[in-house]
Length: 329
Picture 1 (cartoon, helix red, strand yellow):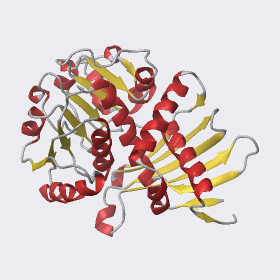
Picture 2: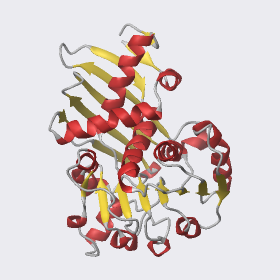
Picture 3: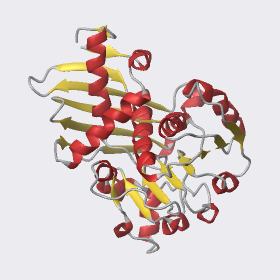
Picture 4: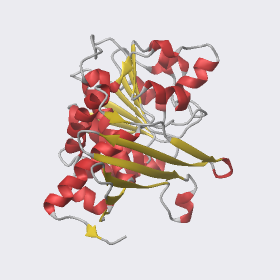
């Protein structure tokens, strides 16, 4: 079995690769070529932690995978990472277990890449300002993907702990070495959102992190942080102001996206308002942005075939380039 660390993966696989591979996978999913059962989530309330088990198989790649991810918010105080994960990749021809690879970075990368694809179709082509609400680890690849698909001139960072925003600002040069625009640390999330044409939300908040009243016409939002029914990054005013709301999968957000579940249960909003899925957008089955005034929202809770798409591509590259460590199981 080939073992691939985060360092191995970073050395051979880029955000550009991930966006290309995932856009193809999105279309394959819509065409019914991917088997993707609902993931299993185990929660540990006393630690506000969770473990996620995500299986899938992709016909075209001849691969199947299962990802195991744990999310323990208190880990940084112990010197450990909040999110840890592994992907086991297997062959659908003979059942061989091909690889075990670090999933933490790949999860962030593929989540960013899917948001990048959504941004490509839903954000204004001229969008040049972005607000990042929540400057934790997930936000890095979210911003990196937006920088891939839009010519960003100004980045506004907001985090409840302002020190994290400053640390994040120092990381931007690594994420996008060619970025020469303005970077601002904001003291108020609404102020950041009011000046942004693209908004990135990647927090574990249980209450909305900005007011929908702050949104200006033409804004696009990527929301990836709240992935459990009790979490809520955006308020109902945001949903009501959106002309197009796109999900990674409708089934997934109905089960897990508190941003939608909470207002739906209160009768303030309905899942019938969803415009469709990101795969339909990539396949041209639903419309993307149609005017500069529309407010659009992409919501992602994650789905296993995103992981398989990038993991299969990483494995093929690693074999070709001789990267990784072979171990006997």
